[in-house]
Amino acid sequence: MLVAAITAGALAITYFAWFRHSSFVAVENVKVEGVSSSDREQITSAVTQAAQGMSTLDVDASKLASAVNGFPAVASVTAHPDFPHGLTVEVAERRPVLIASDGDRQVAVASDGSLLPGLTLDGLSLPTIHVDQIPDAGRLGGTALDETRVLGMAPDPLRPLIEGVTTTSDYGIVATLKGGIDVRFGTASKGRAKWAAAAAVLADPKVTTLQYVDVEVPTRPAIGG
Image 1 (cartoon, rainbow, N blue to C red):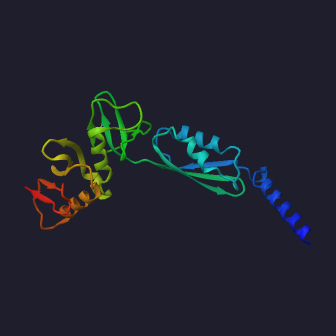
Image 2: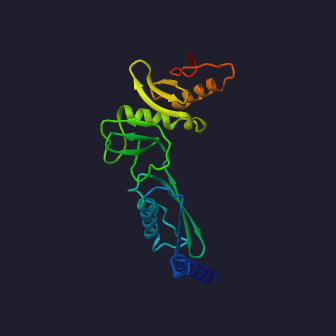
Image 3: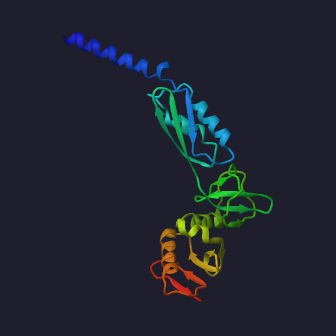
């Protein structure tokens, strides 16, 4: 009985190993969701090709991720098998927070400074920063990166209000909101706390006139105007 049980177990393991890679569960229908950049066709093609040879019982997530490494707009991919032959791949894209311009061309930029050359600018209403030269690939650096990081940490309700960002010698990074209100950050550190302090001031019904909010020390915001 023991030998029979061991034999049956070995056969079951062998059968399952064969079955999980067999044509009965092979991935045949790949659906890619979440892509809005101009590289949509190329991304969909890369993911579909990477899924070839996989089965719905053995999806190689790392292979799918490697297939889209060359697309800056893609932050991550998540696979959801649909037994027996379907596979849905959800693509999470990097959200642009501003547009970088060097006079010759414009490129959308994500919150970590990553350039998103595959993202169309049509319909985007984002603040623009001016740089000496946009890198061919990679991400922004120096002052432009710090400004991008600050905008990337802005709360969603405030994003549509941001008209621009610059760096001054007196107040460091300054984001300008609609109505001409400046938010003075100093440095890019503690960006979320600084935005929260600015939001609290803007929401205060006692504040009826405002030209600037200084949140360099977020626990003690200062206002003027």
